Image (tube, rainbow, N blue to C red; front, side):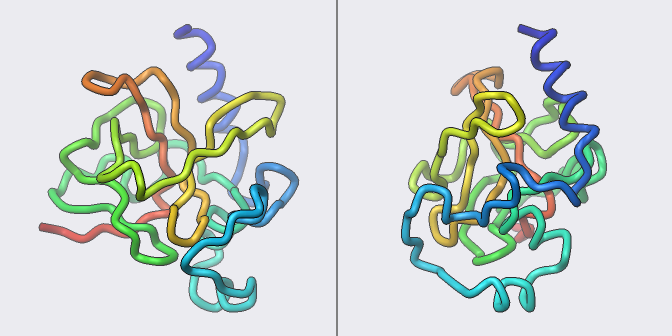
Length: 163
C-alpha cells in the first residue's frame, strides 16, 4: 500500500500544471451535471488566474510541495477559488506528506461531488466543487482517523478565509 501511494505521488510530482487530466476536458462537463454556478469558458478565464483556470476548469494539477496552502497553518476556512463555496476547515487539515494540502473531511459532504477518474492509467476519485464543478483534487482511502480519508487538494483551487 505504501509503495503504491509513494509511486502515485512521484508520478503526480512529474505532471506540470500545463498538462490537464482527462485530455483537457472541462471541469463540470465530464458527468453532464448542471451546477448552480455556470459560466462560459471566456468568463472563467477572465475571473481566474491562469493557474487557477488550468486546475479548476481544465483539471490540471500544481507541482507537489509548491502550493501556497501546503504548509499553511492558520485557522479558518478554505473556499473554492472559483465560486467561494466553503469546502474545508483548518480543523481537518493535516500534513500527509503528499505535497498538497490534505484534509480528512469536507465541511459538509454536500459541498463537494466525487467522480470516478480513470485518467492517467489509474482509477481514482476526483473531488469537485458542488457549486461550480471546479476540479479540486482527489480523495484517497489512506487518511487519518476518524474518516480514513485524504482529500488531496490543489492550493490553486482554493482561497482562505481566516477566522
